[in-house]
Picture 1 (cartoon, rainbow, N blue to C red):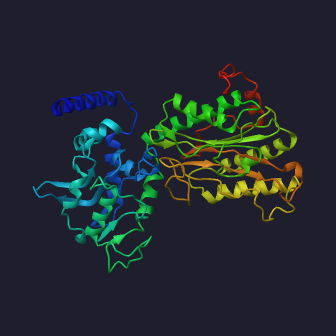
Picture 2 (picture 1 turned 135 degrees about the vertical axis):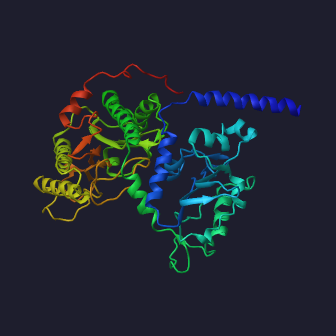
Length: 483
């Protein structure tokens, strides 16, 4: 019986391998990850090592976990998408016990036929070597006896721990154990602290400088990354266009969200870059509204839709605001066109050598002047909460991606997203209440200016109204009523 079970499990794993062989071929290559590790080494201080841990598995409820999502830094350097792993990247070559040299080493989950039957194939050390090109790969239970002397390094760079990782009793080499073992090997203070403030003379632990190094690396995108970002943005633009054609009064916010996300999945986007924001009427004034619960949107309202497909790890971030009736009212159009104008003003100064501050000032000055002309505020320098956020951020492996926020540089990918939000009971004429508009687009910074990546989704109010008149492939899609 035991032999039969083993044969059965082996057959299942073989099928899994066959399925994996059919996976899309446009993921980042092992050469990309190898190059990124080399670029990190160039930026590391002398006689140092950088340490990266995989993301934790997060529990949703009882014995159900959230869908796993790898730590973006870890993925950037490895392409590894499984939990319970640790990566070390050395500034200088290290010598192994057998006399060979290496400059990075990774410890990963071992193959386990029983668990793979339930949760899918693991790469294991051989898979990591063959598919990801990390030649120094070991099972994670070997990290405990890994005998590199960490005290010899001038600096050990890592991101400090937040003490929010579960210890799984059935696994003696899970992420919790890897962190405990790392702390023991490096002399990490036993005191419970969220950040380390250790003098360099007393410790070689450095939790401060890795962020700046990673910002410099990930803030500038490579050609491979730009290819994936373009796909993520194009998919998200198509989602916005299809919703503009399909939306009707009486739909629910969640139904509208579902159309967007159906388009994402139709194009094989694996995930969402962030929880989808679909807010009708006053809900649009909640910047990160994710309930999306209104069962029936009103034809008198605008609907703000902020969604981004995640494609091969890279996420778009696009917002459009449209009239549910198909036509903007006079007040809605006035606010919408003001936000559009603010975005256009920012685009005029969007180029390498400019600054994030320039973009923010351009939008803020335009919006405040327009609000004053509309009588919503009394003076252009009046403090108000109608535009409560900044206008720009990096996108990439994170929707708010790593990157510097001073000067704009070639091959940065950023958003420009001005907005005006006038909640009910605001200190202005009630005719403006409940109007919320955000227009958010994605831009590649070039030598001479920018490439507008998300131009595929209409921005002008007239273009939106024209597209909303077109028929939709979903017009005849009707489901039976529930009893």
